[in-house]
Amino acid sequence: MVESTDFLIVGCGPAGATAAREAARAGIATIVLDKDAVVGEKRVCAAGLRPGFCATFDLPRSLVHCDTPRLALFDNDGREHEIAFGPGHTTTREELDGTMARLAMREGAEIRTSALMRDVRADAAGTLVEYADLRSGERRTLRANAVFLAQGATAKLERSSFADPRWQHGLMTTLQHRLYLDRPARPVTYQTLELHYYRARDGRQIVAWMFPKRDHLAIGLGLTGKMNGRALREELDAFTERVRARLFATSRVLRVKEEGHLLYGGWPRARVAEGVHMLGGTAAGLVDATNGEGIYEAAMSGRLAADAIATHRASPHAAAARYARQLQARFQRRLEHRVRLMRFLEDRPARFELLFEQLARSRAFSDALQREEHERTLRDKLVLYANAARFGVRASFA
Image (cartoon, rainbow, N blue to C red; front, side, top):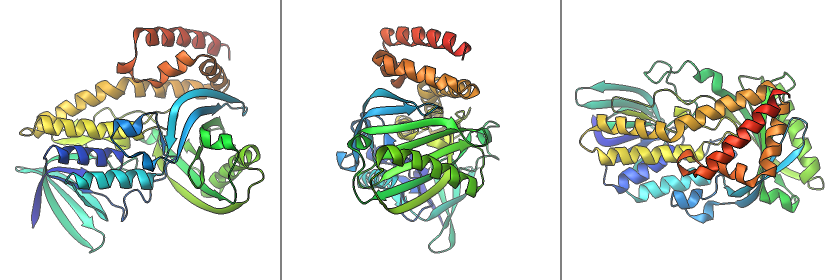
């Protein structure tokens, strides 16, 4: 038996759940497939949210653990540079993704968990999606008018029209500890998002983080390419010890939960729509290479997909084309620029310090850099051009 639906979504992270919620609200029959038994349970992520995220996507404030008005950037030598920020927010992916999924179901979307997609192919009546029901062991088939693929960094798209030769070079190996302490860390810990940029023992660039949560600290790191488990744990243990000495030297660790996964920090995919298929979130490479942020971009890609489907209900091909235009206009230029910037900084680690110094000294510069391109005023653009020129001159001598 082949079931049918208007809109099929694969993956129930911020991209898939937002698309499901907003498409169902518009009266579009929507089904979501998620491979995990519990939505969000296996997401390895620092789960920092940019300022205004909950308001932008109409999410309850109850999922926020900490409001963080400080962004602390640490350069290769461990020097801290404080950036005014937001405030941003922290949560966990279990709470974020689970809340977004529940809101989607409240609007009428159907979410099927333990559903692992196996194949997508077109036929005369639409698109056929085969998936394995991991509970029953059965293979099932759905026919959909339009499909939104949002499975994250592990999406298997090498043999599809979305294949991109740059993709493998952007995959990152990550490892994170959730540390549960017997007493709170220093107060500043719960006001700060920390990002650290330094070299691994093998010379590769590491981006590490400390994000505070309601009952634990998320401390992790990522680097491009593969690293064996022992070496990766040694890197994380060394970084955790540096954080401990600054923030919770007198606390005792009661419990440690270790999480590892592949994330992405490279070029956005060149193609994000083909036929009636759309690609969103991290699967589309919508991640800021300088800091690993991708939750906002993912959720916004879901919103754009739902809007496209609602606008072109009778023509899924037109919907996919609209989605691609809007997504690329919104994110492509900025994300590609961030990849080039990260590569430039990695080439000479001393450049991180120079950039962080400028950001710390100029609130106007840090504010302009955090805004999306369509939000920037003429003054913002002038500030960015002036600071880019200054940084370029200083960096050439680093």
